[in-house]
Length: 232
Image 1: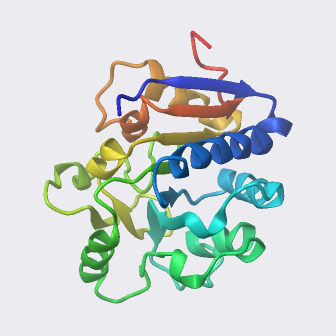
Image 2 (image 1 turned 180 degrees about the vertical axis):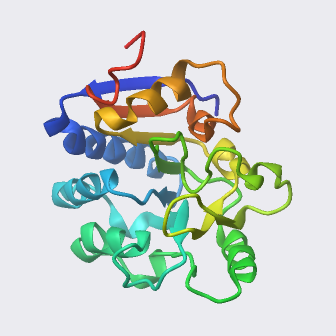
């Protein structure tokens, strides 16, 4: 599939609904042509309201989705910092899915390298959709500027040390994002404006702004996050 950049800018109050509507439409497209949809979820704060709105819409054939994660903090799955916990509270607990459909990263394990390798083996050869966020520094998943994960050519998931807490994490590698059939990137707030502009319009290197990995994807953001763009 050839990906093209798409940009949707909405009022902040409409972001969750607009993003959820798009996710539902994408899932419908996927399962119209294949048995199941393999979707990787983003963590962080912005997706929480999106996932909750998606659950409220109740227009998804839930038993045909396999859920994965783009990254995870190395904390227990019930820790407030856990991406899995956020997704469970805002989505999984609210919809009719089985535990077998949720493939969480076992990031709490002591041997993080082994956990990363194990999770990489679980990932499909190509994700149908990966949902991503963007940080104020331009990171996406747990791929931060200058990350050695950009040198990874063999593994799909690696253990990394992030510059912000929680520092120890697991993340998909750039190849997973680039191989995904569809990417959807969420951005909210003026604090993200500079990073969004760098990701979408700058000629800087992807190592300096990892969110550029998803430049050719569907970006859904509020007006504050889009305020640094020259063209919208």
